[in-house]
Structure formats: C-alpha cells, structure tokens
Image (cartoon, rainbow, N blue to C red; front, side, top):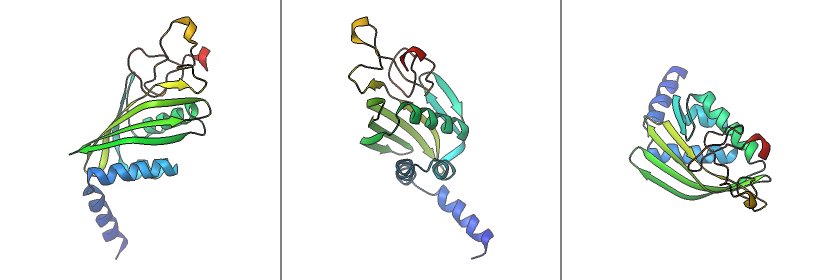
Length: 170
C-alpha cells in the first residue's frame, strides 16, 4: 500500500477507535513509560487538563504534569483499582507507592472523542510513605497537603489531586 493511502487509513482507523480502546492503550503506554507515543496516539493536540488549581492545554501541559508526578513519586509502582467507561467518558481510580510519597485514592477522568483524549482531570493526595500525610506532622493540627496540578511549589485547599507540596515540606 502506498504511504499516502496507509497514512489516510491509519488516521481513519485512529478516529474510529472506541473509548475503551483509547483508554486501554493510554494506560498500557503509561505503564510502559512511553509518554511520547501515548501523547501522539491517544491525546488531542488541544487536550484540556483540569486539576484543582490548573486549567492547561496541549501536549506540553501533559508532559509537565507527567514530569511533576514522576518527581513526586520517584520509582513508583501504580495500581489501577477501578476502570469505568460510559460512552465517551472514562474513569480511572488508582494508587501508587514510591520512595517519597504514596497515593491511596487517585482519580483521573477522561473525555474521549474522535479516537483521542480531549480532556483529562487529575485528582490525588500525596501521603508520606513514612505515615505522615503530605509530609506534615500530625502534631501541628494542619490538614494534609493537597495536590492538584502537579505544582510542587503550591498547596491547594480542598480535595486531593496531583502535586502541590509547599517547599518547606519537600
């Protein structure tokens, strides 16, 4: 098959992938550590990333988010606790254990249309793997550090999502 026809077929085939196919391919590639292939194959170039404290767009936003997560959870092992799909929507509930922090109740949601992830939300709370939530001592009476947009320089109020740690807790 000439390259032009193969390229057209490949584009049409990708657009016809179901929500489950895109979702499972995304998870497989992330487990394998192949972010670039995942972004190219499964994410819209204009993907919207929503977290508690961020509203970002594009592949660069997804790269930054993945980089911050890797910094927060070095040498991590992820477990997928639940996967749900309904029409164009997908939900992943997960936990992770790392050398630095753990996550016990992470949740990502996805909007998948035309064979690509159009929007992703990320929500989790870092818990010290030494038994102290978010790196905070229990004696100070403060709530655990919340995470939202993988930004280790900020602390967020409200529910848990990827990444905020005040610099004094790192």
